[in-house]
Length: 292
Image 1 (tube, rainbow, N blue to C red):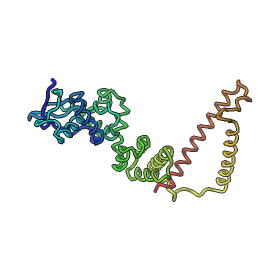
Image 2: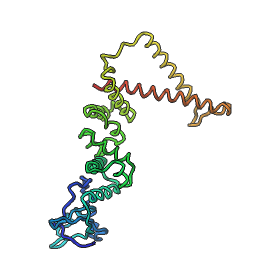
Image 3: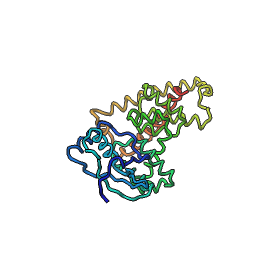
Image 4: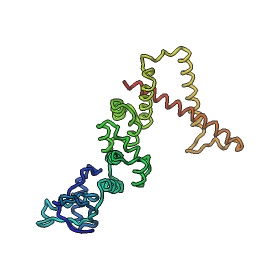
């Protein structure tokens, strides 16, 4: 049913997933409503006390409040509404669906909304089905609620990448904070550094401190000599590979027997896997040296 309802008889949903409403965007919406009218009615749910709770459209309602403050809506400000009877759970579900359709919902807002539904009895799979999303999204967003509050604020403000934050959610909060501090001060340079530091913490926890500096054995002369040889070998390999390219083209292909190209590619792939593994372990060693 569509009708006009007084603004003072409408109340916001206290469990609305979106907690932040951009003032500039609200101002623009209010100006648009003033000039062109409300393009789409809000959806409300009738309450026993005669008021109506917003299901969808809180931004439009807030924009009307701005216009009311400016005296642009007359003596008894009204807003056009779709009135729908629904249970509280149905209301929460609809509120989440509306916000998922907006690009500016914050990751932790999403996570809190999902968790509230899980707390009401939904399973991850059923909630994902009802919302039309993948279960992994529900799991990933609710996992963000394990972040330290300061990191969550950085993620929501786009000051710390969401992808980086996903690597920290299973760590103790003091380790999360330390890793983020190392990243923001430039001591961890990119995502691979974050990932390595996170894994270093997991290894420390799993191994009960066996990777602490005081428990690390002193390298032998043979170990030092082997490392020196490896460094020189790596330098030669890098120089050789660089010499095989010109302007991004693998000029070495011109001298390769096409029948052997696949075998050579397999050899390079195996070497690449070993190099990536070594890179990961070296980054973790570097991260461990900075984590206390």
